[in-house]
Every structure is written in structure tokens, then in C-alpha cells.
Image (cartoon, rainbow, N blue to C red; front, side, top):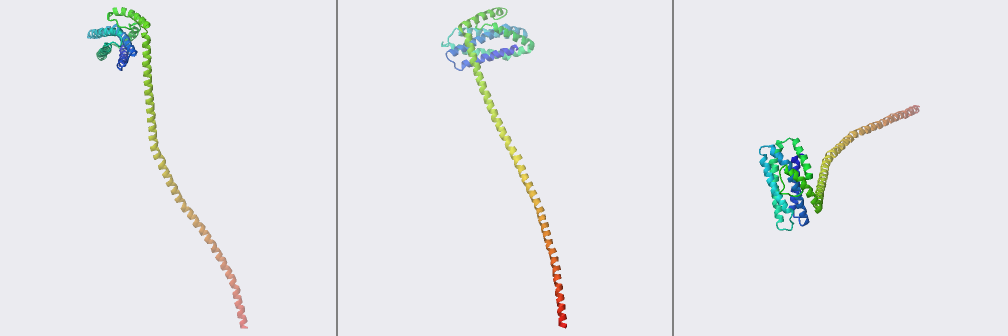
Length: 296
């Protein structure tokens, strides 16, 4: 991780703590958040003074002025943190000091991210920023966790005094239980973040399901109208046409059958005619016999 990304992450962590304090905490929760703010800002100031500001001094022409301004602002913050470290949240001046601290730190963050970090990114290579980031991660492990306004703020004094103060501070944190409170507070924040993330994910899933269901319904309606109804009507018309075409064929068959049935009586008539002719012959004979009798 490069130096600029690491420092911006520290800024976001501190800002989240500020918002927690501004949400209206009371009692022990307020004190725990302030102790965590003191720890985060003390470590952040130490790594900036050990790694960042020396690089800023050498990176560009106005780097000396920016580094001196940053160190002066750090000194003010350290003095305020030292006062808060010995105060109780029930004291009248506790909240005003915390609020003034929040304003000063936010102004300091805006100057660093708006002016110092862009110039540093242009002046230094990515490899150099990565080296600075790894150096800051190593300095965090040994940095002091409490404010030391009287300690040196520039190398080589801070590089020597910082780790020693860090060992002492961590021993005090272990005795007083401040490190444990910090870990529990972090767990609470992580659980809250996870719960909110789960709620968001479930809400997104539900909205996605609803959207997919709506898409399915909308996609089904036009298909049923276009594909099922029209072909059905066409099939009906075709079947009707076929039926109409088949009916004349049946009529033809009927007519042909009728013709065949009509021909049979014709044969019968001829037979009757023959019979009549056969019957008529004897009549002629009788008449001749009668004539003969009359002549006699």
C-alpha cells in the first residue's frame, strides 16, 4: 500500500470516530471513543512526522513551508489531546475541547488531501510512495499511542524517542485496560457495519427479485398475446377452410351416387318394355283367331 492511500485510510477512520462522538454518546461510551481518538491521532501524527514530512521537504520547492505548517498543526493537536487524556467526560470543558479538536483536525485533513498529497503524487514515483507506505506500516507498530507535546517532532529525535514512548504507552494501555476497550469498540463498529451491510444486501436482493419478477410478468404478457392468440385464430381459419373445401367433395360423391342409383331403374324399364312386348304377342294371335272364327 502506498503512503497516500494509507494516510487517507487513517483520515477516514478518525472521521468515523468523530461522527460517533457527535451522535450524542453518554458516559463510558463517550470516554471510550475519546480514548480511541487520542490513540489514532497520536499514531497518525507520529508516522507523518517520521516519514511523510521529511519526504515533503525534499520533494518540491515549497515543501519546507508545507511541512512546517503541518508540524505546527500537529503540535496544537497534541496539546489538546494531552488535556483530554487527563479529563473526565463529566467535566464542563470536556465537550468544547473535543469539538475544537474535531474542527482543527478536519481543517488539517482538508489541507493535506487538497494540497500536499496531490503535489507529492506528482513529485514522487509510485515505487517511492510504496516504500514510504511500507515504512509507515512499520512505524505504526512502534508509534506512541498517547500524546507527547514535549517530544521532538523532527528527525532524528522523533525517530529515536518515538519507539521508546510507544513501548511505554502500550504498557500503560495494557495496565489501564484502554487497549481492551479499544478492541471492544472496534468490534461494535465492525458488527454495526456488518449488520448495515447485511441489511443493504438483503434490501438490494429483495429489490432485484421484485425487478426480476416484474420483468418476467411483463415479458410473459406480450408473448402470450402475440404467439398464442394469433396462431390459434389462424389455425381455426385454416381448419374452416379445409372443412369448406372438403364439403364439395362430399356433395360430388353424393351426386355421383345418385346418378348411379338413377341408372338402375333405366335397366328395369327396358325389361318391363320387353315384358310388355312379350305379352302383347299373344294378344295379336287371339285377335287373328277371332277373325278367323268370325269369317267362318
